[in-house]
Image (cartoon, rainbow, N blue to C red; front, side):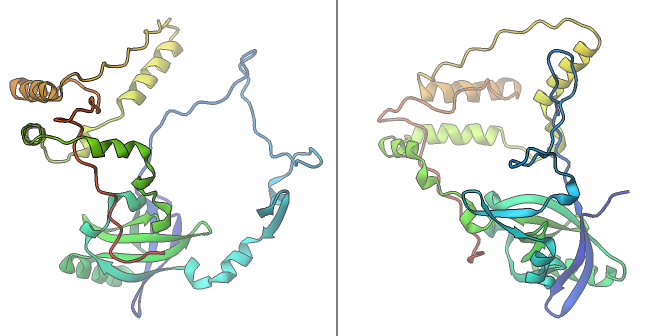
Length: 295
């Protein structure tokens, strides 16, 4: 049975919707333990005081914010909760926006929202109204001592909540010096046409179940083979692909490969030599912020 990570209510005008929050994703990765190379013993991490060198039990650990070198202000959980008791128990909806107004760069973590005891009717009302209006709710709440900007939407018969980054947490591409090179290159009309044809030939409905972590699968296969006592030969590292000598020729070859057997073309480097008649294309526009300030 799934375990909720937060319970409270969605505040929708004067309507409160009792809800529970559940994680919607389970990132999968291969986790390694640190071992002593001499005897294979697992290493343990200890919380040690920097002053007396003694290990500190969990019940004697407090939260501190460094205001100057080696000077800390101690803050308790009770003090944080007292700053805004309502914020720790409610998701306050502030406005409704179109989903297309939110650039994906602002999304962080995803959660399922389920109705708590007595909240089923209000939950259904909010979900149905959002579906009819075609809107996404933008609000805030506090999760794990941090105020979160969130997007709440209806998806497949359930409310989904995505935590979001605030505007000042998204870096502008203006800081990238490499983008200055784009001012000296221009894609020809023929190159753009070929690139568009290649994109159209590879267009398909998004089916996430078709994609899987091939590298993680190879790592697990390696571990299983070694666990079975098999001696594994290390393959030499592949050489970096050479730079594309001719952008147009690469586009034509890629398009021909797709048309011939329907499979993706061989991977090519994403950059090309800067030439006056062909390059990587026009500069990409910076991420579009939500329609209003979220700060």
